Length: 314
View 1 (cartoon, rainbow, N blue to C red):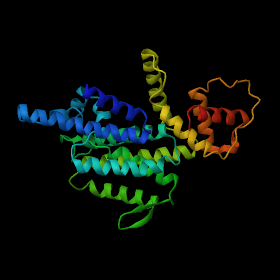
View 2 (view 1 turned 135 degrees about the horizontal axis):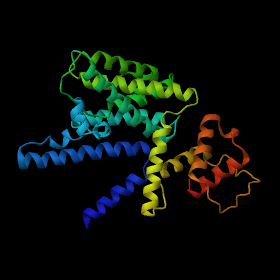
View 3 (view 1 turned 90 degrees about the vertical axis):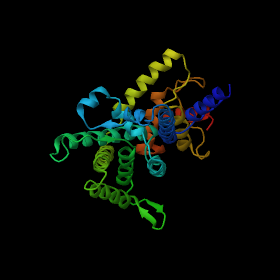
View 4 (view 1 turned 120 degrees about the horizontal axis):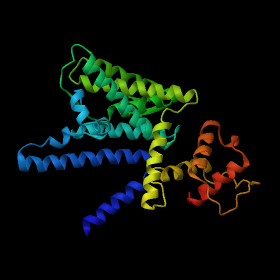
């Protein structure tokens, strides 16, 4: 009974959290689970790395064919305490800055795309470069995904400063540049595969930021696919809320309406007070708000935004 209550509390905390915290919770949850399985395996068989092998990304294509899910699971998997601690702190700090300029779904989408970009460059290197070809290696960790976020936000706001221990305030452009340089130098060191993956994540971050400046969001196809899957699951289970986007709406509506600065806009819309504002409509309005500001919204859009924020008790 107590265990069921704990599980329910964990589920509730996860569903009510922001997208940034969800990513951190997933990483921490996988870390704890892997170590628990490793402990049991060590006690029973003397081998504790079996579970890890099924989550790490192998460099060998034949092994990957038998474990295709590792393209995704590797970016949520850590084994060293210092590894996950550093990555999660980095994700929290730079992810929070990222959220000042982009939407939560874009954060999750870029995290996954950055991880996939790191995996692709890692696989290409180990199967195409002469001195790495034939080597058997495994990749794990969120570093490539996190570096994609770091680089993207540095391109978006290069002169924004971040306080660093012993260094004081440092511009994001220098933080990102030093991070990439360290990864490039590290390719010649002990963590060859990891640093190659870091570079792959950085390239995805550059791609994302430059595409956004041209008005194109490369995370949109992935997020649309996730929305479709969540919609099917919600329809099948009869759930009334979209756990992928509900906390997103609350945060973005809060950002849009502020603390009461704007009074409720008048609207000649045909929608009545009880009409629902669809998730797609709210997405479109928030996207326009992000791109052009509050004044660019029509009276009808302002009314819908106000109604949505009030409905969600922000």
